Image (cartoon, rainbow, N blue to C red; front, side, top):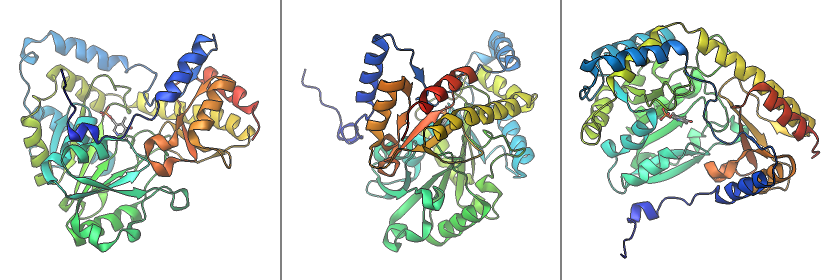
Length: 388
Ligand SMILES: *Cc1c(COP(=O)(O)O)cnc(C)c1O
């Protein structure tokens, strides 16, 4: 049958890691003990009290029916309380909070609510690919904002021309940042909120890693900036904070109209999050936070171990207090993909080539700290045997 993919599917960028996947399989088949630091998925299990809460909630037949689309009232209340505790931000649970089936679906569907065909959307790169694919699916056009090391991997807001600002609907930001690990400051968010107000722009902030830190406070939320709620929506998730990537639970909070638009799209596409999962999420958010603190310290230690090996090999590492990613400049004159292939072939370590996240990621690779410390030490030792 001559079935043909839609133009929107055909317009998606090609899958860049095919060649790397092929080499990994080939190296593995040679019997090499491959250490995979490629995928950004926490290796540790979900805290046991959260699993117990799910098991208990799953037994209750009242959780077996369709959930409320926008989330159980108790879940939305708990998210609002969490924001107040963590960020001193006040949210109305009924209108300013929406549950998500993991934040990815919210990020992907949000443009459908506010972007018309041909509208511009400001998208950082390198970045999580969903901002641009969601824009594409809504018929919008991504205008890329390069994140450069000399700017601390923040977009240069002053470099965006007025014509673009005039025609843009949404500006995406993601801090703490995947893939670079960079953080944003109160000053940056203040400038961003002012820009959004001036140009009638929606600020969509992806804060999936705000708790992934070893400092004793979370990364700043854009909603802490006075007036931010006039222009901003923030996406969050239990995935990285509580090692719950498989569970699919997140939320969007912020401006009432933005939450309402997203909720309307969602009510036409999905039917909300399994209530037992929401109840387990409540347990995670309201329960003891020691596991979150411990994960932060674990990632800090892992980062030190891997960074030591990278530095011994003569490589330059971007320093940060956030995320479980290590963003590393490849040696002068080399391409990201060639460097990643070399690591795999010569020392059996998988890293993700930076150009897979956008053209400005060329010249970097990303290591995810998702193996136990002895494995990372082994990776570090192997890496330090290379000299650049
Ligand atoms: C992992 C990740 C998410 C979270 O995805 P979920 O769908 O909530 O599991 C969101 N944004 C970025 C940048 C991520 O890396």
